[in-house]
Image 1 (cartoon, rainbow, N blue to C red):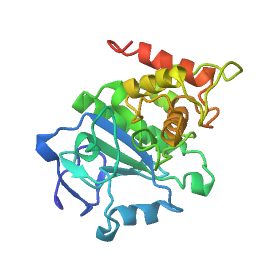
Image 2 (image 1 turned 45 degrees about the vertical axis):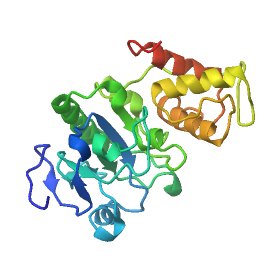
Image 3 (image 1 turned 120 degrees about the vertical axis):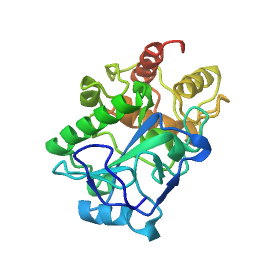
Image 4 (image 1 turned 90 degrees about the horizontal axis):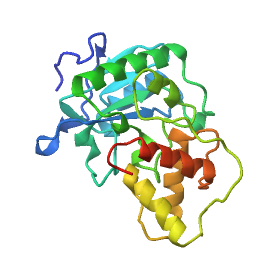
Length: 253
């Protein structure tokens, strides 16, 4: 895959060796967004294109909005790692991955650049239109690997992308009081919460025990859909926002 034409017309090409064929004839129906989590864009791009790293993505977007394609969309880039969504585990074969240059939580979670977000919106819209991707299949890396990943983080403007026709989103319920659940709690209400998370796609055991896995899923959900407070506590705002998202999906609730 060292010689290919860009799928996104204005992307420049820098092939990465870290890719292969999608397994079992799988075609992409997911879009996964990441931040690079490295100090500089150049270091991140070099890492994604170095065989020793064993990681890549289909696209890389730098701070100025320059888009580079590393792997053709027909190929299987190695960006999702050990991950899970709606019972599926080979998400590299199921998805297209976009790495967005940003130092992330380790670098203080600086805001994404305006030109960068505009480029991400244009790229996502093009991919969604060409592959007819459902809104609810545009996800964060942290959604599919909550115990391992935090990217692209709570600073990423998911609401703005939704306004541009990208991704599933509802206005978050206001943060306030009310009953809440947290790690260590058990019982039927926790089981009901886990069922809701599982229905949306998160990988949680439905056993009524609010454990580290459930906490990580709640944190991931909050980063994406209720970013005002990311604490792993299932408060009324978090549960209400999750319920709104589920009822917005036909045939789920």
